[in-house]
Image 1 (cartoon, rainbow, N blue to C red):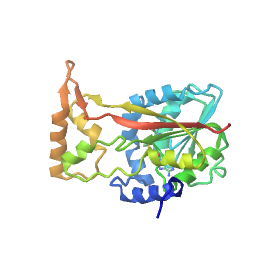
Image 2 (cartoon, rainbow, N blue to C red):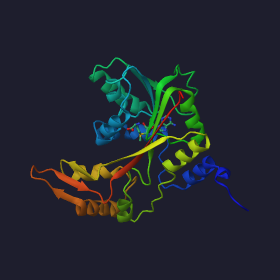
Image 3 (tube, protein in one colour):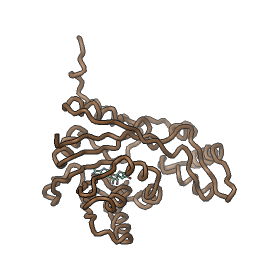
Image 4 (cartoon, protein in one colour):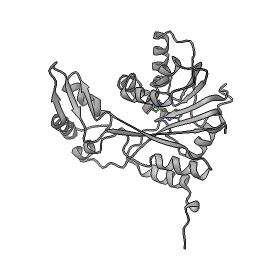
Amino acid sequence: MEMKYADIDWNQLWQRERRQKSWKRKKKRDWDKRAASFAKRNLGSDFSDLCLRMIQPDPTWSVLDVGCGPGTLAIPLARQVARVTAMDFSEQMLAELNMRTEAAALRNIKAVHASWSDDWQECGVERHDLVLAARSLAVDDLRGALEKMIHWSKKEVIVVDRVGPGPFDPDLFAALDRPFEPGPDFIFTVNILLQMGITPSLDYLEFDLSRQYADRDEAIEGCGWMVDDLNDVERARLGHYVDQRLSENMDGSVTLTRRKPVKWAFIRWKTNE
Ligand SMILES: C[S@@+](CC[C@H](N)C(=O)[O-])C[C@H]1O[C@@H](n2cnc3c(N)ncnc32)[C@H](O)[C@@H]1O
């Protein structure tokens, strides 16, 4: 049978490949547990600087940040735009966000405890100029999530989506002798958008090829988040992996260098044309 591009159901393929991925963190309590360490690693990171430079928001805009986490983007964005609605289904992520919102005395961030699948209208969310989902499209119904973003956007949508392994380091999994299947990435988002008649602009963010830590223990912690439930053998292997990639700096700190940088796709399109 002849197969055409238009026959491919990218949403169904996305769902099938998500079931095969080895990384299964999708529950609220998993994100709750990791909120503090995620905040430490990501607030003020190269990722947020690079992203903000790409977003270049209109200062008069309202922004809805879906899956905002501890405010990696919501907090710096609030300094540049009229107002930000920061939405997440993890209470602990929102607690991290609120702590930093107060410390920075920002009055234009509203935290909303809601999930992708909630009725956002019932949660009191209005349409915003820009709707943003950065590293947070962890949904089964990808097409539904994209349609929802478009519906709630007055002017533009931005999605930051995984490319290949994204933040994970396949070499670390190999060193631990653990299988690694990253699951579907940004190309599904792009294909679904194309089938919806949308031609988004596409760019890439690359960073974290090397990262500086105070010492070896911090470096181990800095990449240990990728793997859960390490046994003793794996812990030793992780230490060995880190030692192989670590170099000492003049000031006593250490730098961990990966073989390849972390890469994310930056996808944006206008909704008011
Ligand atoms: C990798 S973090 C990204 C946080 C932030 N956007 C960033 O780029 O640093 C993913 C965030 O999405 C949130 N999240 C995951 N699934 C969600 C869902 N179904 N509804 C709402 N938030 C969700 C998690 O709680 C977490 O804060």
